[in-house]
Length: 216
Image 1 (tube, rainbow, N blue to C red):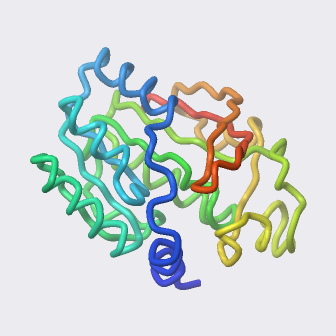
Image 2 (cartoon, rainbow, N blue to C red):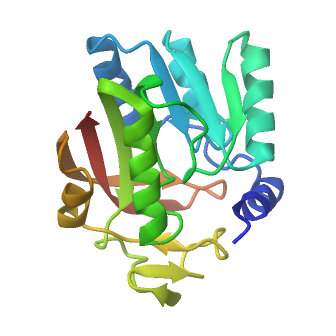
Image 3 (tube, one colour):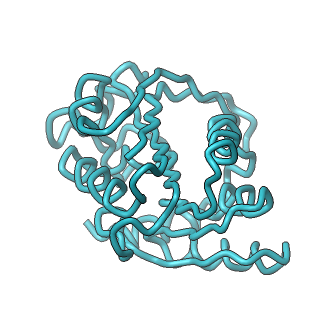
């Protein structure tokens, strides 16, 4: 699948639907500061809402996304805010940075896109680019989510046409046992979390997620 074209089309049609900073990102930013984190990779930055937030809190941010449109908007936002944010366009399964490049990696509302193989590639790449002792924060969509089982199952636990606005994007659903196996070998915690948010029509939505905090 040509992810770049799909996400560009989504961003062109929908614009920036979500602008508020997620509570989980505020929480992890506090942890980053307590752990003396300086450099953060915002992987799958979308249109940059969390990159801007992290930069304002004093972190040196590298914002990346597969969509050139997302990178373009993020760059424009940073310029308007007078912030210095490095931006790079790439696939989340192939991160173009050297091993041990960042003190921390943030990856929210991204890692559930694709299938299981995509999720594992993404996790391995995240661990590769974070420094030893560095912090990783990633969220995943749980099998407890209400969209699990909807649409067309194209592989085990992978569905398309089950998420409004992202019909052409595969969505993979996981559980704590699987994630613990993926992050084995590193200190980590996995906790369930319910995201609640409103769309641009003021409709309320919920995502049942699993939050992974990992120290390499």
